Length: 73
Image 1 (cartoon, rainbow, N blue to C red):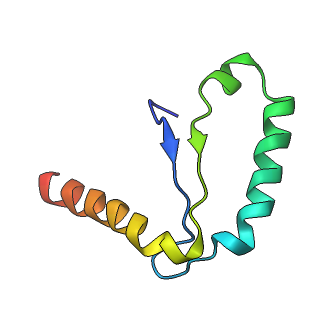
Image 2: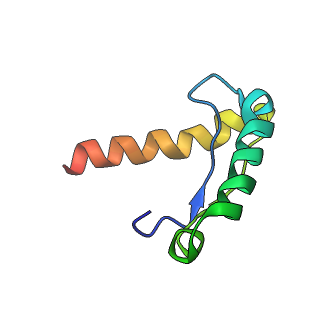
C-alpha cells in the first residue's frame, strides 16, 4: 500500500461504472477485512466509491497526477 490513505475508484475515464461494480467491490472489501491479518487491515486504505454522475470530476485528479508524473520523470 506504500502510504496510500484514500482510493477513489470511478470506473476509468468516461466509464462512470461505479454504480455497476460498486456493490461487488464493497462486498469484496468487507470480506477481505474479515479474513485479513492485522497488518493487512492496518494498511488498508479508505476506499470511497464515486457516484457515476460525479466521476468525471474525480478522474481529472487522476489524469493530473499522471501528467505531472510524466513531465517530472
